[in-house]
Length: 124
Image (cartoon, rainbow, N blue to C red; front, side):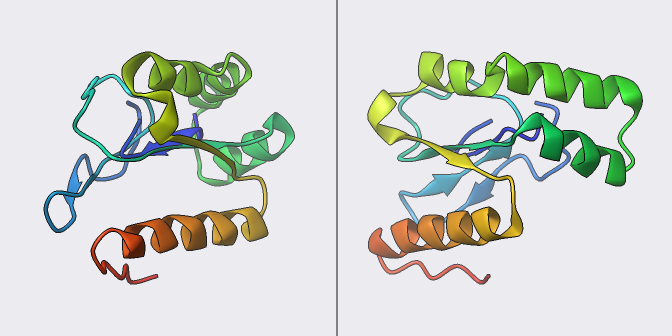
């Protein structure tokens, strides 16, 4: 599902673990199957409306089965629920990722938070 998580969430094609300057760590996954409770400072769950998600995944060349799995998971709020089961509620951000503007706003918000944690300035 393109509900994804930073410091976060299985079926992602992205890198499994990226380290930020200590003690910050970022994890980009599509589910929270790793259950690393207590090891992260921020969990970001990216949400997407199904009418945007389906064509996005189709354009990426995902199989019909993979698209159906992702859309079903988004409908059922699988990643958000797994995040709530695995991490403290106060470190979970659920952000909409429907439009390019949403994505830019999300990147800016996350970059701002990272910058507040010890001067990390991500390259955007």
